Amino acid sequence: MAPQNNRVFVVGVGMTNFMKPQKEPKAPHFTDLVEQAVSRALDDCKVDKHLIEFAAVGNMFGNGYGQRSLYPLGIYDIPIVNCHNACATGSNALYLARQMVSAGIHECALAVGVEKMKPGSLGGGGGKRDPTPTSLDFHY
Image (cartoon, rainbow, N blue to C red; front, top):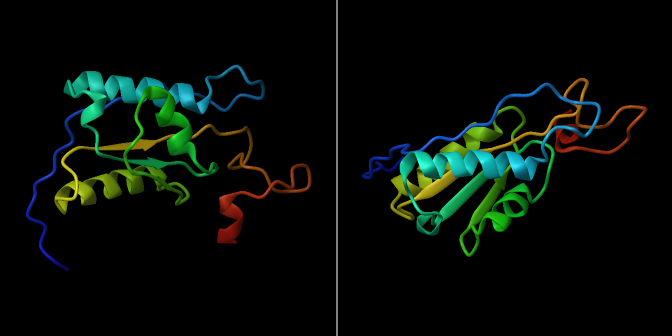
């Protein structure tokens, strides 16, 4: 593996409260969770969103969550990668963002991990009551 020449730092962090999955749709939508976490991270590091050159968004059950959650925040015109890797999606997003900076491809990257779980075992669908396939179904 080629040596990485650029040191990488996490300069801003933003989180939301962890909530128990709700049967009623009372809890915030995933886009609201991303908005809150990204706003807090940008406030923490005092970096303007227009300096972000790359974003990686990890989510287990959705497709296009990166675009759907970052575009309304005015974060677009940059590569936005969606990653799905079971319980490791957030760490995969951080890994991808780190690799982009470390390799010198981008100077400023955003990593986001977001889940909006349903009640029950992994809450993603499947089974007799809800035959909707999820990305987890391909792991069996």
